[in-house]
Image (cartoon, rainbow, N blue to C red; front, side, top):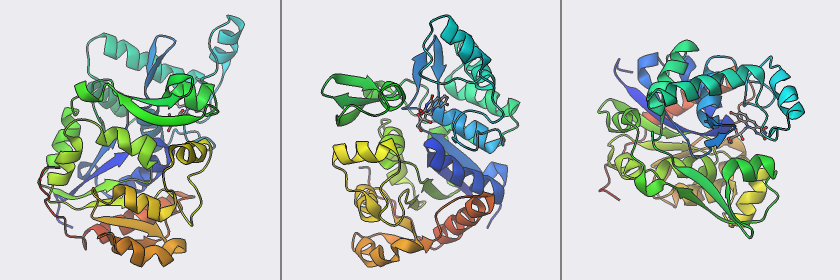
Length: 324
Ligand code: FO1
């Protein structure tokens, strides 16, 4: 690959961060730009919490909690124990080490830095060279609509353990949010060999990114191919509480549901070997199909998938489609 070929990756949640780690292993630092979902962000205990940015920072620096994928490894919980004693809100678990990130971020934001600038400082402190860009420096928040009204994402997902019945989601602040400068620069770079949509939840982690005004049309105007990696394998619904949410939202899960959801946006979809039977049906949607092992259990799985994505991308011609 020529020196200056770059890859721009849209990522949210734990699944996305795994592929980004694999790409970080196989690419040089200057070749990789990550656009992180900030729709899960919320204000808690006076702190601006950015879960998907922190999952990327911790995963890419080897600090992620291997069991949960979020928060830090080797964590201690003295702060939480003491907060409980004082009658504070402990439903959102903040470890002692993780807390230092939130306090540092808030202090830098309060000093007037943008979220992009704060993220760069945190990445530098954690020796993460991969460029991580928030999708926007303005608040754009995923809200879950339920019979009892609209809930902040973390309140729904963590505090209420996704129990309320959801009738919809929407992205508060979408109309006023601007693309973060780094995200816009990455998506419009002439050096882009591909734009990659990581195996994150399309409705919860990727949709907020695409809801930033101008981001989707910028992606569609790129001459680089857009390639998504399916977050579901072998018809298994997206796991955990999000599977319930997907059912309630009436989205069609499975690789065909993913292909239909992304059809107007992507040029190609990478699916797992276990879903090879759907290759023709996905091609019938006008998509190229890459087939490989997409389940990432260890670093070698992540690296192998990243290598496949890069090699497959080189065979997919991007189409500069008119502004959507
Ligand atoms: N998820 C939980 O299910 N319970 C928690 O207590 C929790 C705390 C937490 C703290 C920091 C952080 O960055 C993430 C945290 N998460 C927790 C995960 C978070 O809800 C999800 O990572 C994203 O919002 C969805 O990808």
